[in-house]
Amino acid sequence: MFDRLRLAAAASGLALALACGAQAAPAPLPLHQASGPWPSGHVQGVAVDVRGGYVYYSFTNLLAKYDFDGKLIGTLVGWTGHLGDLDFNPADGKVYGSLEYKEDKAFYVAVIDVARLDRVGVEAGSSEIFRTVYLPEVVKDYAADLNGDGRFDGDDGKFKGDVTASPDHRYDCSGIDGVSFGPAFGHTGGKRYLTIAYGIYGNTSRADNDHQVLLQYDVTDWARYASPLTEAAPHRNGPEAVKAKVFVRTGNTRYGVQNLAYDEASQRWFMGVYQGQKPGFPNYLLYAFEARAKPVPGDLVGVPGPGGKGREQGPLLPLADDGLKDAATGVRGWNQKADVGLQPVGHGLFYLAVNAKVDGRQTADLTLMRWTGDAQKPFVPVTADERDTLASAPPKVGATPSSSIRVQ
Ligand SMILES: [Ca+2]
Ligand SMILES: [Ca+2]
Ligand SMILES: [Ca+2]
Image (cartoon, rainbow, N blue to C red):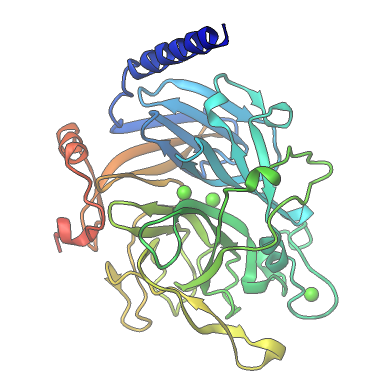
């Protein structure tokens, strides 16, 4: 009897698996996709579920889900914080995004069960699909009383008109934005870690804000922290420890790393930024570092050491030896807009977003592009033929991007 039941269950499971397997593969990667106009903040980042065939857009206080045909599948709304950059985690099918409440000194990763986002206007606060994990490490740096006057001067309205005026915030941390999964720093393979980049205020008169700061977390046991967010009483459930914390010296960029993305094809991390304003730096728009580069302890230039003596020491990652090069600083990068949407999708293909405001509403336009290796023009749009050729080729894992097609 039980055996028969078990057999029946197995048979129905098989039938289900066959039905799923028989489902049409998603449409090919769209060459273009548009989202909006939305009555929301501007687009902050995109995430792509390549196998499932979905694109996710963060519009600050709205998350939109589309399929590869451009059909709107659902939206998630109803928070007042700042949802920034995103990434899709194929291991659990969830979208991870940075979420900031500066006034509450509360920074979270939003963990969104996007498979269940199937209609427009889902309220995050009352839905089980929206969970948050608190990040004590970020709060410690953001809320540091750096000048030691016994008071934390935070971004709670008192610096209205000039949010960079606070003398506090370690490393000038303004919170978090860039989010991406990728290998442990110094490695190209193995387990994937959630990697989160700080926002950094654009105070051009400070010297301690010239590094990007990146944290890595193992999210395997994050179910124990993931909590519903009640904005009136922000929770503090999150991991005390980070797996890694590294520094990358690019020169100050306003609000740090806007978009963080790990490209499997080139085994390289990309950081899209708002342009910095310090005259001593080249102020590129896009920077990169190699996954294989080992963090090396060294001086954090401009950051005073303990007791104000010497320089603070920290694990440093060098920028990738590619792209434009500033002779004075040695800083390398590209002048490529990558601040509101940068998402590699394999085979040297990337989505890049541009944003626009139409009658007070926000739009995003995505274009599928390929890496060129050209320092002046690192990405160009692909045609359907180029996409199909690249996407059907065996993945070129580990190929240096610039070695494939170099047009200098
Ligand atoms: Ca942003
Ligand atoms: Ca202070
Ligand atoms: Ca990202």
